[in-house]
Length: 307
View 1 (cartoon, helix red, strand yellow):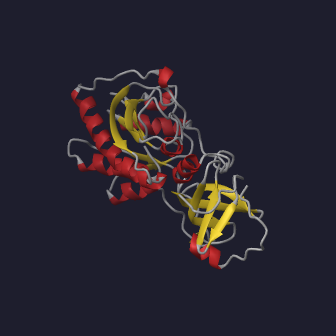
View 2 (view 1 turned 60 degrees about the vertical axis):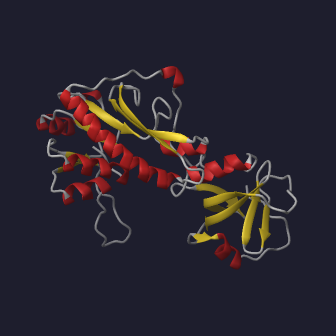
View 3 (view 1 turned 90 degrees about the vertical axis):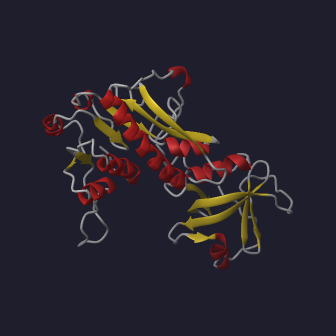
């Protein structure tokens, strides 16, 4: 069970193993495309499953009794979940040997909807994936295995997600083997060490320029490319996709959010220095690098401040 591209490597890895028989792939429904005559867009998992010749079932309601009946009719030994909805016990208990989830953090750290993003935002230098058996409390089940990896100092959320999806595929296959052989030595999570990775919203993705520049750098790369960290520039929303820490010879303004334009370079002050904006999108405009943005920008002479 899965929907986005993060789950695709796991599906492909399972399907490639002769010892496993995928009896059903569950995913979300097709999404409408823009344009009146456009065909709906299948999920990444549906596209991968169809390419592999696997049966697909689509649902947007995991509480639907028909969905429960469909899952029960498969008589599956194991259910694998990766980036899907929160399942009720009436569904995940249908697998004979249990149901497990692939989570993109080293549990119990970063329980929640956005573990990859929050690990980078909070300046972590290490993360990984965890497989664990499902239970009623979300992301709290007994751990089957973990795989660790470092986070690069310039790594962005979208790149880390791609790496973790591939690492996760290996963890999923190994977990299946352990369960099938009866050798899965599970361990309970320590709730006292748990941290949260809440859903990303308009409110918690807004840049607060009064933070130190190292924190601003982590925040921006932790939200790239979607949903993207944002601020306001001359009354319009500005998404910032890429930035870098910089030592600039100019005098630090001391006022967080102050913009400094130096030729074709775009700097903004945090609480303790400058950060250089490299890639952005102003409301109503296309994504562009800073130099391209500045070519079309006319400075009035008034101090500019991002809010």
